[in-house]
Image (cartoon, rainbow, N blue to C red; front, side, top):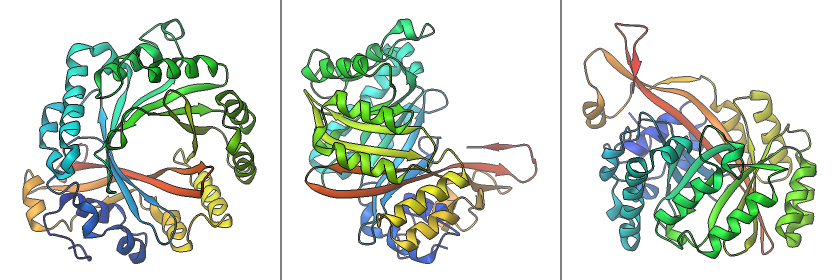
Length: 368
């Protein structure tokens, strides 16, 4: 049974505690707190049939700030999205329902775009200011279809996304600025994600670009006009010189690019890379010691048996008496450092894991 004071039928809280199993009691106590789950209470943990994860601040005084679900363009039951408790988001409930309806409409009306985006990531903000964000994965996409002969190019995809979601529309300055950004950086970066934090307004997009090497990151900064934080970015990249490429750069794009940047360092399932990133963050005083130590142990073991589900949750998901639930291949996905002129640098960690049912009577059988 879970060791912290959570409701026995709060599926998401139980999942996260099991995901953190084997790290440290202190990490579980600071990150699995009942009050942060008001936004996702009632959400079935196996809704999306894909990876689930959460993000939390690495500073001592800050904790969990988001929970996410992966939605694959194949294998995800989008017809179950009506189960997401939009009413938990108060004034943003209508925006949430519109966003979920958009995902289903995208699959139905523009299937070539739905297939091209590979996956969507539905992120629930645990803070006080918003409904989920929607992020769309487009690894490696260049600006135009000519660069991707087997499918639509980045701007065709983004045009459909911008037009369909609640917000500015295809012909807005946001769409124009995004098109310019992709074109201006085509020789040094590729588009990795584009998304919206819907509750914070959709007049700005979050755009993740994959960049190889600090020199290209600095070229990107010059081309996007972020001179106000150029020196800070250069100093951080110097600290991370021991971390291999690539670097993911997150920009906020409105009519102009906002003076804010996220530098994202992915672990790529490498224990060596994870250790290097944690050492650097600790040396920079951006990660408290107990969280860094717990994350160093997070990926071991890779498969976490989840036999201690509360009975109420167990009965909902256990399809037969001979199957058990596993959390498979849990991993520290990436770290993000956020820089802006008016605030100190902050660091977050993103962790996730897949969950599946394993049939003990058939060693080759496992399914979600």
